[in-house]
Structures are given as structure tokens and as C-alpha cells.
Amino acid sequence: MSIKKVTPHPSQNEALIFERSQTGRVGYRLPKLDVEETNLDEILPAELRRTDDLEGVPEVSEVDVIRHFTRISTWNYSIDLGMYPLGSCTMKYNSRLNEKVARTAGLVDLHPLAPAEEAQGALELIYRLQEDLAEITGLPGVSLQPAAGAQGEMTGVLLIRAFLDKRDGEASHERRVMLIPDSAHGTNPASAALAGFTVKTIHSTAEGLTDLDHLRQLCAEGGVAGLMLTNPNTVGIFEKNIREICEIVHEAGGLVYMDGANMNALVGVARPGDMGVDVIHLNLHKTFSTPHGGGGPGCGPCCCSAALEPFLPVPRVVRDGDTFRLDADRPDSIGRVKAFYGNFGMMIRAFAYILTHGAEGLREATETAVLNARYLAHKLEDDFDKPFHSDCMHEVVFSHKKQAATGVHTLDIAKRLIDYGFHPMTIYFPLIVEGAMLIEPTESVGRADLDAFVEAMKDINREAETDPELVIGAPHSTRIGRLDEAAAARKPILRWKPDQDTLTKTA
Image (cartoon, rainbow, N blue to C red):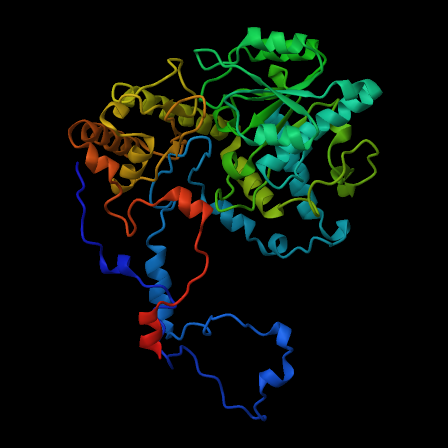
């Protein structure tokens, strides 16, 4: 399969809505005024009037508007079109049933200031979801308040600090070191810093696992408050020494926080609490059926051991007999981390996801996610460098080492995938792998799609050997070709300004 540069379809040449504007064209008609027309310049204060060069809004018909935005929508890639092999992101297809349930009138219309007696159904849903997540993680304390994964992990680190402050008193001020592996997500050191900790980095072994000798060395230096560990780790490998890792940190007087970003590889199979983990955040907007991407909304619950439970954010959803209420009388709590009680719609979706799958279905989803990733790892290991030989879990990492010999690098491979109809994988992460390509197919991808992805990657590898310029110049089938992404990020053009031709045409 080889895709050459083609002439864009007419819908790919769609002009900006401002450029489609024609003087006098409208898509509506208002009734004639039955009052005297008012000059806004006379009643609108000067400081509220625009003084820039924006000449009004576009003048377009209804059909102009419909076709414009419909055409633009065809440029988008979505989970309904195909797989998102974004490693670490868990971009999977989720049942539309969960979306329908989240739009139940009595739930979606509930006001956040409604008294508890008028919100019993919602409070019971939250409580039951907490119970389910406690069972899934093996950690009894749960707060659904955090609004995203990063906020959930910051909450977990704040729990550790509050616990240590109460346990050690003034001596806790000498325990302000957080250990973080060199392969970790960037949010980990950021959360630690926000919570007042100093970060020390743990090395990875050649196998891609946590270096136990280095961990012991750092713990022996003293001042360790805890460890922030992702498991499976960011290179997609299960930390087989997890129990020993937890014991080392606990013996040093610290606690273990686990980043739950990769729980899609564990749900229904292994519980962090059983491994010795003290606190974990979950990404409901990844593992448990919430729309992912686009900046939210999200939900990043924090689950913890019984010892840390008193420090969870307030209010807590608790059960009194047959009724449910919000309990804010928790003197050891770290306080609120989100207005009201988090993003309730995300909780509904997650609860529906868990109920429709059941214990057996959740385990099957996890096993399928791991199987799919290992299938890709096996099929592509002859074509792409695989830096770690251990069996991967739900995602696999490759590097551009082989292709770089002909001048083709990770970004080129990712751009060329677009020509084959696939969304690119996660690139240049984790940072410990040069030219990393992190691929996570998730459980929602079938054999046919996996094989198509494999064939596309193999074709790109062949092109890198026989026609590297074709890959380096990709993508060829999109409306816009290769962008200067650094300039686009640092000097974005956020506002349309008419050029002279447009001014002449509309004059």
C-alpha cells in the first residue's frame, strides 16, 4: 500500500467563515421594528464599544453555515472512524449506552445546590461508585471529588503530606523528598512540587523496571516521604517487584502513591491495595468510559488505605441507614480540591460502564487490552526497534532506531500514518526512549483493525528504506501538509484578519 500526493477534494478547500462572507447575505429574517430604532452609539458607553479593525460578523446564509461546519467536521478524526493508538491515553470506544444514561433527565438537570434530601438518587450513585472503585483497587477510602487525573494525583500526594504531618509532627518537615522514576509522567513531579516536596529521580534498569538498588540508596539518604510509581510503568511493563518496592519505601518511613493512568491493564485482574500501595488516583475519563481528550471534563478519583481515609477531601458522601448525605465534619481533611463534588456526569458514565460489564466483563476488557498490545508487539518487532524485551502489558513502546539510519524519524512515521487513515501514536514519550513511539490499541480494537495498523506500519518501514523522502514529506493526503509545530505552538495566530483581496471583494 502506497499513498501518493493527491489533489484535495473540494471539501478540503473550505474557506474561513469570514472569507465566505458576502455583503447582505443572511440566514434569517426578523419582523419589522414596532418601536423607534435606537442609535447604539448614543446609549452604549465608549469603553464597551469595539475599536479594533474587525468589520462585524460574517454575512452568510443558512446553507453556507451548514455546509461550512459540516465540511470542517469531516476533517476531524474520531473514535467512531477508527482506532486511536495513543499510548498512555487509553483512547477507547465506549458504549453509547453510557452516554444515554448520563443524559437521564433527573440526573442531568439536578442542581448542585439541591439539598441532600432532594438528591438521594445522585448521592446513592456516587456512594455505590465509591464502593465499586474501592473493591477494584483494594483501597477502602475513596473520594470522587478530583476533576482530572492530575488533580487526583495531587490529592493523593497531599494526603501523604497530611498523614506524615500528623504522624511525625514537627519531624515531618524533615521528610520532604518524593521519589519518582525517570520514566514517569510529567504531572508526577509537578504534583509533588505543588505539595511542597523535593523530587529525586529513580533510575530504570535495562529491562525498563525500577532500579531497586538505586531505590534503596535514595531511601538510605533519608527524608523520604514517599514514592510516586506508575504500574504498569510508562514503558508498558508491569513492575514485577512491586511488593518489594513498597516494602523498601515503607521501611524508610514513606508511603507509596501509584499513578492509576495505566489501570486499563489491571482492572479485574490485580488490585494495587493488595500490592502494598497506600494511595492511587484513577482516570475515569480513560479506564471507565468518559470522553477523553479536548481538555475535559474529567474525573480523577483518589483511593487510599484506611489509614489515609480521614484526610480525604470534604465533603464525603456517606450512608446513614437508608439515606445518603454529604459529610463535611472531617477535622483531618485536606479540604476541598474542587467546587461542589466534582464532575457528576463523568461519575454516571463510569457507574454505567461498571454495571454493564460486571466483574467478568471488566476482567475480559483488561485481558483483551493486554492481548491486543502484545499482538502488535509481536507483529512489529522485526520492523521497529523494541528497546525492552519484557512482555508488555496494555501498551508497547518502539523507537525509530532502525529507520533513523535512512533519515526517517519518529515524527515522520507518525505523520505518514495519517496518510494511511490512522491517528498517530504517542511520540517522543516516555523520555527515556530515544525516538519513542508508544502504542496502545485498547480492548475496543478488533483483529481486522489491528492487522490493518500492522500492515500500515510495515509499509512505512519499507518506504523508509526505499523512498525515505516520501515519509519525511508526509502527510500528503491532508488539507494542510507538514506544519512548523514549534512555531504554531509558540506564535499561534488566534484571530483572522482580512487581506487586501478580501477587503476589495467585500467593499
